[in-house]
Image (cartoon, rainbow, N blue to C red; front, side, top):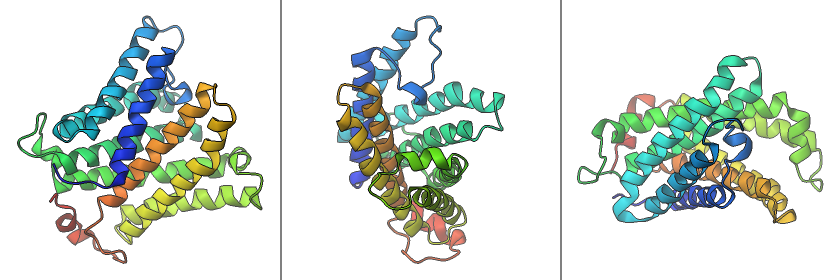
Length: 271
């Protein structure tokens, strides 16, 4: 197993905590897991989902099980995306919120995949060489690069709603909503075309982290008995950690690299 930074530990802990919430409530993660209330066996599926999140979250923190746990989590997140969010996008492609919802879960897929590629070795269970290659890492980075602009576009389309989440003590709340939206779009574009990708991914992670701290911690702490606030905080934490995992995947790429896409694979090769 290759050593990873703090991003993967926070990612694993957030997944585990989300699982605990599902197991404790017998329910899914609100709008992030929009399972219709009339689905047969809904509670059973909720417990199963919570169990998967708990087990994979713990597994990702244990050296011996990190590779299979991250593999299972990535597969789980992909199913989560395809079953719960893509259908809404297909039925309502003109509603940006559907694109943003898909983008958030796709970000978790990207984070889990890069984590798997970084920790998996030929001796690990569930080792699939093509999924742990430098090319695989680049594909996951591109998934992230496509996802964050969609999140940014959501900030812009629903700027008034986004501004409502900006702390009241900050000046020009609408301005912050617009700046963060543009920041998401700029970061995704930079990563996609491999211009300042490490810097872009790192700044994106810091921005997501600031949103988590300034917005969702107060919401969760302000209503400690309400599951929604804690769920939103943990989802935001997982997204932030996924962004850090992406940033850490560029650790061998110079901070100020321009148009190095041809040589990127060499820097991304797992070590």
